[in-house]
Length: 422
Ligand code: GDP
Ligand code: IMO
Ligand code: MG
Image 1: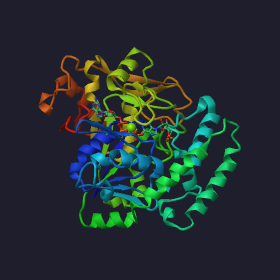
Image 2: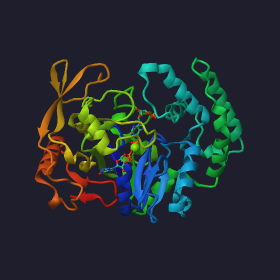
Image 3: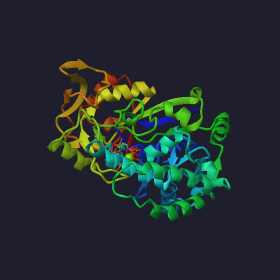
Image 4: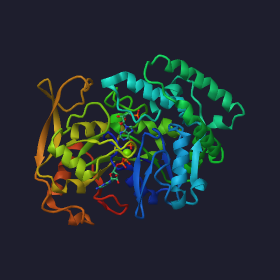
């Protein structure tokens, strides 16, 4: 079977930490979408590691790690990442596999991303500027270069052809010139390195492992509310972040899918532009940012913070068929009283529990349910379910009932073992 783990909010829910924990139970971890816009944080021993492209199972010596066809790979980021973690993970290249159908991010994709964002002015998406949007546009526009192409004797020709196309496109933006040529030497050096990695016909590779009964975990990037179809469009990323993305992003049939783990923080964050109904533009929001160290793992930007949004969470759970809910960063809320959770939206004065189509254009006022909080009993020291304070358990029970989904794990710290299994 292939189980799935994905973020239910706007990303950064703690996927890296949880995959690293769950990897003990799986033989393969596979990324199925996104690219170096992702930043998944793990603590290995005392070392903090941020992974952008490599799956978060890489530190388990029994685990094979696949970068699937649905991912877009920036060779330079991949090379840097490998070089950085190699000392912690000497057998890395023996356990890292690349799908030959994953698309490549070229230097000119990054230039196009920067130019397109600059041209949008105040309406900019707040992209990580890693070239994600332009690379996926070339994929669906049927122009893209894939990992398999780097093995072709014509690779340079194909590269030059696509780059010429991008230069034409760049002409339409009258923004400051972007010196993308400076990125080319590192790109070709990284492509050279990629040729030494194990490139596989990943859908057959996975099928074989599935038929042998191996346990596989698909690791999502970003979050459900950044899904290109169902997120807060156009303030989204360019891939399907929901469970459906697993089938197209890895080439596995839906019948192989088992459990779907959905991760939510005990509150909510978003980085970049776009609607965020429960955002707190006040001292409480700032206090959450400080307590949760809410700064982007990829860009370092401050994350916007607010209360947990059960309307959006219920939508995300519906879209992916989440079977197990994981709540992270519960310890961050240790000193917040009262706590709030949005259970309804008022759109033009009308109450609804559905996510409005035009969330980007209408004023949405969340309706909140209040909770006492657990400021008298910090969670960070709890090791078992029984030790958790009753006020926190009440908060969880309310959420489980509202969402119709059971919480399977509670995370109360950054470490691999700071996790309570229910
Ligand atoms: P991802 O993109 O979903 O993997 O999440 P990020 O790594 O971008 O952001 C999550 C941040 O929260 C990281 O800095 C983690 O180390 C941290 N984190 C994860 N779980 C917990 C938790 O339960 N408590 C606290 N305090 N921090 C956590
Ligand atoms: P992980 O996997 C949080 C956001 C960006 C921007 C929008 C589009 O670490 O949870 P893009 O670079 O895709 O063009 O950006 O999506 N975004 C993320 N926000 N976590 C991420 O990944 C994100 N990846 C992209 O901030 O608003
Ligand atoms: Mg992240």
